Image (cartoon, rainbow, N blue to C red; front, side, top):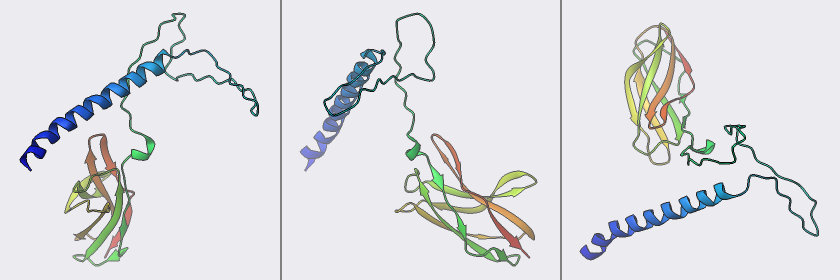
Length: 171
């Protein structure tokens, strides 16, 4: 068993290097392609020229192109948090249970309950972690009478993520 464990990092490193090589070769091939319009003709299809223009492309007369790979996340990989509250009206000192689901956050990621006070979002003493299945649940005791605007917050590498605001009336 020790020989298998000893070789796994080497295999992972080798496959990672191979992936980088293949991706960079594909990227170079894509940028080497001609930017001129192309037409495709088949016996059963119509002729349609296709051109793609990058929104960041400059309109200079220079024929050279520069390639820089970008590491932007796809729209489906964007992190989000949903929230629902079990009671919309409680007495001061009672607890509310907030539950929801996350997307784009890892299991075990910390979540924090915040409330709006004087136009600023401040943290309450209620935290949770993302569970397997991307769900979470936390219980918070609300002591201040009035209307509480609550949300769940999480910090990721790509930035901070907030849930929609829920309102709870505290009597």
